Image 1 (cartoon, rainbow, N blue to C red):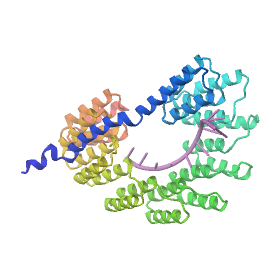
Image 2: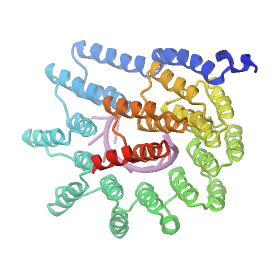
Image 3: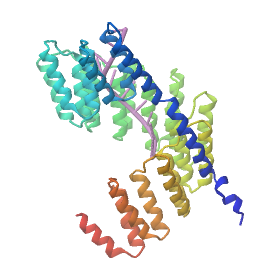
Image 4: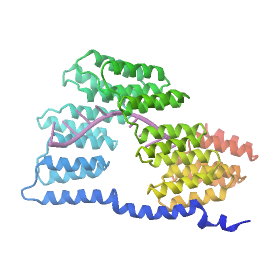
Length: 433
DNA sequence: ATAGGGTTAG
C-alpha cells in the first residue's frame, strides 16, 4: 500500500481546499465588499456636501447598488435622503418600489404607489411595469394580468414593449405559455411591435414545455418579420434541442448562429458542455471547453461544475479532482454545487469517509450544505451500510431548518428497506400521510 | 439622461 499517494497533501481535493481558503480571503478584499463600501462612502460624502447634490446624482449611485442586489441597503439610503430633506423624484420612487418587490414586499410597493398619487404626480409606465413584475415575482400572476388589463381598460397608460414583456414573462412563468403566445400575437397586430425580448421569452417557454418545434417555428416567423435573433434566442433553442436528445440539430443551430454573425458566449458553450456530460461523454465536453478557450472565452464555475459532475457521475472522482485543481488555478471559487458533485462521486465509489470529510470541510469554509448535499450524504451512508448515521443526518438537517424533499424521502425509504428496516420505513411513511 | 422586461448551469 502506498501511503504517500493516499496522504492528505497529495489528495487533490484536500490541497485544493487549502488553496480555496486563500481565495476566499482575497475575495473579501477585492470584489463585492469594497465595491459596496466605496459606494456607501461616496454616498455619505455626497450627503454632507453643501449644497447637497441633485437627486439624479443619488439615483445614479444607487442604481449601481441595486445592480449588486443590495435592496435593503438601497431602501435605507433613500430613507436617509428623505431625512436630509432632499426632494426625491419618480425615478427614486420607482427604484424603491422595485427594491420592495425584490424583497418580497409587493404590498409596500403598492403603498408607494399610493404615495405617488397623494403627491399629485401620476405614476408612469415604469412604475406600473415594476409593480406588475413584483406581482409576478410573488407568484401572483393572475393579479399581475388583472392590473395590466385594468391599465388598458381605464386607459391609464399606453403599454410599451417592456410592460408587454413583463406580462408575457409572467404568463410563461405561471405555465400559461399559450396565453403568452396569444399576447405576443396581439402585439404583432398592434402598434407596439414585439422585439427580440418578447420573442425570446415565448421561445424559451415553448422549449421548456417540450414544444421545441413550435419554438423553432416561432423563431422562423420572428426572423421573417425582421427581428434579429440574439445569443439568448439561440441559447434557448440549443438548450431545448439538447434537452430532448436532438444534439445534432443543436450543433447545426450553433453553426447557423455563427453564420448569422451571432457569437456564442460562455453560456452557449456551457449548454453544450453540460449536454455532453449528461450523455456520459465527458471527453466531448472537454473538447467543447478547449474550443471555447481557443476562442478567447473563459470557462466559468458552471463550466467546471458540469465537467466535475460529469466525471463524478461516472465514479471518476480522481479526474474530477484534476478538473477542480484546474478550476482553482483560474481563480474560480467552487460553490456548493461543485462539492455536491464531489461528495456524490466519493459516495459512488464507496469512499464514504472522504465524502464525510468534504462534508465537514465545506462547512468550515462557510458554505452551507443544502438539501441535495444532505440527501447525497444520506444515500452514501446507507450504501456504506450505516443506516444509523443516515438517520442521524436526516434528523440533523431538519433541525437545521432544511426541509427534506421528495428525493430525500425516496433515498431514506429505499435505504431503510435495503438495510432491513422495512417496517420502520413503513411506520415513518404512515406518519407522513 | 437616473428607473421597469428575456436565456443558460447544478
